[in-house]
Image 1 (cartoon, rainbow, N blue to C red):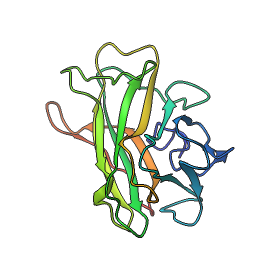
Image 2: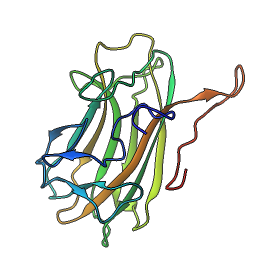
Image 3: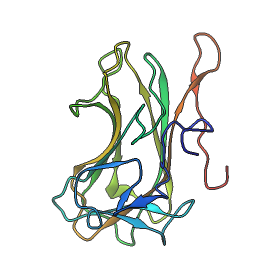
Image 4: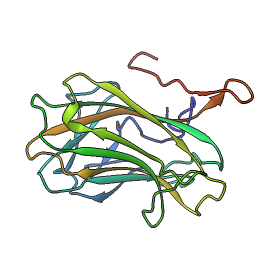
Length: 194
């Protein structure tokens, strides 16, 4: 659900596209229709998935701005824990190289560190993917002093092997709930059947 049912992202299932770019997302690096493609044949849930096509060189990057009508109206609060989940698979042949990072960044593309100085980053090794959609997830913790603009960014830090494709679908970002004072935090993300 767009900025609802616990998910603060918009079009995070990549079902809606305009001019070969998913709606509410900005393609920062790469070519629309070449490096990223709307794929309606290989999907985990909904109408489409985000296909990233490797050429061995391009470090494809997309991002969505928080608290912005062109991105998502969802906001990030200071000193809050968020859980991110995305379903990912590969094409028929394993890639020899490729690393996808999911990060919280400011307007200058700097990673937003948590209150302990640790970067808000989730790393997905694309060489280990299978042909079955699998959940990849992690936790982000916001600092006390938030930047004036914040984004969630998905980017290749190691280029994907030329001719290989990976497919992302049904991502979500949710505020985590603390189970009891001083206790652990919890978030639950839906599969293809909520």
